[in-house]
Image 1 (cartoon, rainbow, N blue to C red):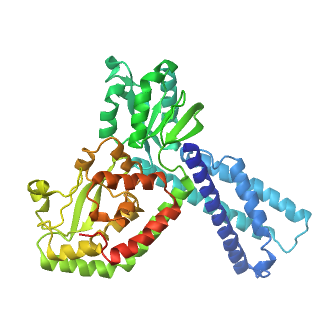
Image 2: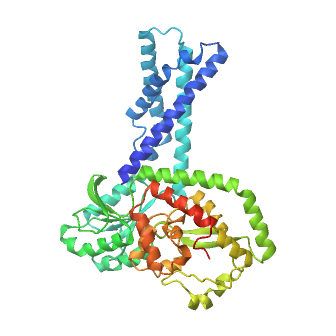
Image 3: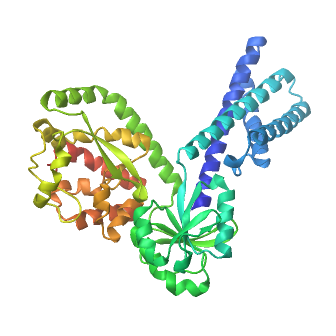
Length: 468
């Protein structure tokens, strides 16, 4: 999985550099044409693929695309300098051999210089961008390590040394209770296998690594199955178990072989496309719907006391928390009145639903019926808190009441709409059924499924199907 992510990132970097270098070529032609009139650009177009192949190939050969985020600025500058010089010599030699007199040395120097400067600026911007993300706590996957032996310690040492993988060690788990609280390789032993459910329930863990002796196989099987049920990815440095519905894959990370079991899709390229669609659609929608936002905001202000936007803490991927935004549809003191209304809950399970909720304002009822109250969540989509399509983000207090299998809803980024939304919505009063729809979505996720759900959401919203 981690290798696949790195491969996708590397391909994107190469693609971006190709585009930048192509732009530098046309910029070089424009600048040279300003200094001295050249032949039409079509005379030089054959130069472009040669120029791209030489410069991108040289960058690749000198290691520009391996472990990029660990590189220092001077190292990057040295690689670009070497790649530019070598490719310049190669191109000049080819130009001399084929006697292309109409391609001047000045033109060659300009396009290679423009390419080198553009690539340098891009790499420096990316470097500082990734560093900024890591300082803010983003772009990391949280790992829990089961086992504290020499192999586990060596693995943790490698993880800490290779920050470009974007991995963060949350702590260790050991079979020996006396080790709880100890610090190993700068990370604490959080507890034993018995305390694993509590640790996973209280910390945002993306991946559990079992690096244990073979004698532990029978001991850790229950813990592995528990992670599977919760939808948390597992890597085992030992053997394969007979799991129910996870996808097993073999990989090698930092010199150690692992068997990975995941319940969510590992199609990194498709997930990247999904995120790009989220960004594009949410940005365009926010711009286009800005006048509607203003109208709704005015109506809310004129008809009730309180803020225009309702803000609420929700849970996203693997238990992370974020602030969800909606148009306020209830009275300003709605949260204070929730406890006295719990006895009227129409939903079987941890979620709360009430058809004639007295806290809903008249304009709020209309907004809910038309789903207009959900529109501010487009901002959450743009930020990356949620997606356009995915299981609905639950409240932390609801998650605290989940059965183990229900928590697997959190193994994929939540969304504005989902299978539950287009298959009955509030007409579904059994949370188990709701959760099963979400797990069905997770188990069969694809870009096509997302597209189908979005298409089904349109009539569901227009006709208020299942809305209350």
